[in-house]
Length: 498
Ligand code: NAD
Image (cartoon, rainbow, N blue to C red):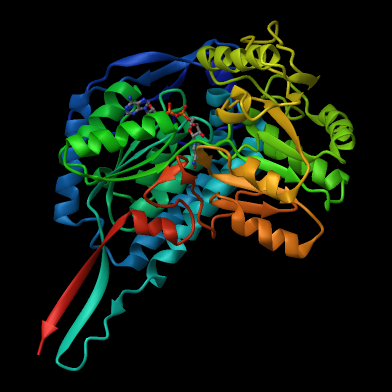
């Protein structure tokens, strides 16, 4: 990014954006096209530079290099301790460039800079360190065959793996998939979301500086329907790990069925419930947690707690405290450190979220907070954190993923009713609930259909814990934790017959 490859400050990144100098390109071994398109920022919809607009042929070139690299073994046959060393070196380089990468995500995705600096990038670096450390601590098994045979079961890398990423946590989603896929010894082809390629580009450049062979980690930038589809349908990609919408996730299963039966792991959408039981203590911690679950990252968050189910006895008090708590959620230019709500990612998405505001009013939702659009600010795609009461389970806002700052409140009378409402969704990514009653906590946690359940707080877990969804929130595996390594390897049994 800078001439002498020194890390940039956030002010320098913001200036480069003003000068239209931010660039993300393909990083493909061998020839590839140099076609680019303009890249804009959701902050004010201005052009900030260019990004590559790859073709299906570019994907082909990348796959040939990736396959050659895998067969020849330059990366996968390195001793695990050496792969670890290089990954750790990469993590240190990412640390040195933390401010630059945070500013790239801020400008590219409209994410609050404070979040990028203090949450996204530290978590990204931790992910690289954690997977680097894991690799020489994972062992195979010996089967109990009896003394006339010896059988051992080992894990091998799959081969050519492609990771297809969403735009909501650009650096972090890159880390969640690239770190385990690469450390297992695969050749990895990254396809970032077309709206947010900047940090991925910089991170891959730094990987090369750390000694990751070029053909072991390549990047193809471009549109989903072209590059994503070419990856999904490719006959020589062995596995795709996808994070994004359930709608596009479904396509990857079709692509696989229509091509080479590549393995597919999907991390998709959600419509996560938060429950306040009669047995809960209403306090400011709980309110802060509910607001974070609902509005963190402009609610452009797969595990966003967008449905609040409240026991009727607590409803008025909870609403009153939510409204008061929203005072500290400052909406504005995400480059400012005090801001916690920036713009929606793009105009089409803004229109979609606005559509839900209008529809919820039409369908009988009662607006109790927010609801305003700040159309004179920057791009005009700024929506206040909004709370609707009296949301009926038949309403669209109860069922559909909005991916924007709208919290829907529904009241209930009994524990059984709350569980039924919580599970009344085609999604099952996350859930959180509040109670002081331990027996109730255990009972309810066991009945909620979701990949992550948080009691008396909101959490997605951390790098040590697997993350993924039940029902239409996911398919085929989990991100994070040692479970994620399973996605990126295959199992081989070797028999020695006596
Ligand atoms: P998206 O599905 O539109 O795009 C995701 C990726 O798929 C992008 O790289 C895109 O270019 C590509 N793509 C789009 N159309 C394609 C096509 N026809 N064929 C092949 N590839 C295609 O998702 P998004 O809008 O970038 O991200 C938001 C979604 O991601 C939300 O639904 C959110 O819940 C989900 N998400 C899930 C998790 C999780 O861990 N479960 C994490 C983050 C985001």
